[in-house]
Amino acid sequence: RSNVFRTEYANRIFNGKIKAEDYQRWMENWIPQVREGSIWMRTAIANLSTKFEGIQELIEEHAGEEQFDFNILYSDYKNAGGKKALDDLQRNQGGEELNTFMYTKARSHDPLGLLGGIFIIEGTGNKIIPTLLPFLKKSLNMQMNVFKFLEYHGENDVHHLERWVRAVEMALIIQPESYDDIIATAKKVAELYTKQWELAL
Image (tube, rainbow, N blue to C red):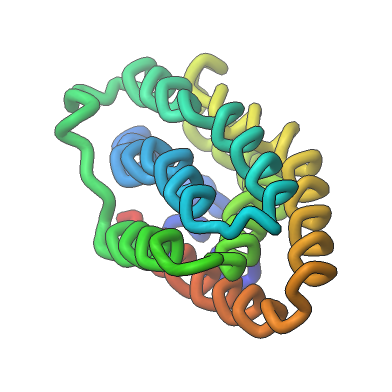
């Protein structure tokens, strides 16, 4: 969180210098990232052993809830003046590296480390977005129909975090040695997630 708040993009938000085109560019980077989320989650499910059935069910529940969230963000983008077609939007370099990393982990055998990565990504909605959103709204002075995605995740990700804590607890009971991979993956995802913010402008 501290590293994200130090990025130039967050600095512009806090200091009232963010512009509509900055917000549009951020969404252009983020929409394809959100679009991929449920896909790599389900890739991970397919590579978990049957002894992790309970974790598979939790991940599938989450993937099902969020598989169309990119449409909410794309609607915000269009309402904010974004012009690009959905399939023309691209992640920045940080987002590309994050996406590649998540798919690589998801395709490995029993990719329990991803639970740490998901915890970091979901945690941003609970720990970062609620702090930035009031400043963003004040700076941009736009209609509320351009912040629906951020509002939704700011409100709901606390419940999602509880789900991932439960999944981690289940993983450690079944396979205690997965601890190191969960922690290492969380740290790597935090690094790449921050890079995506650093390259947002």
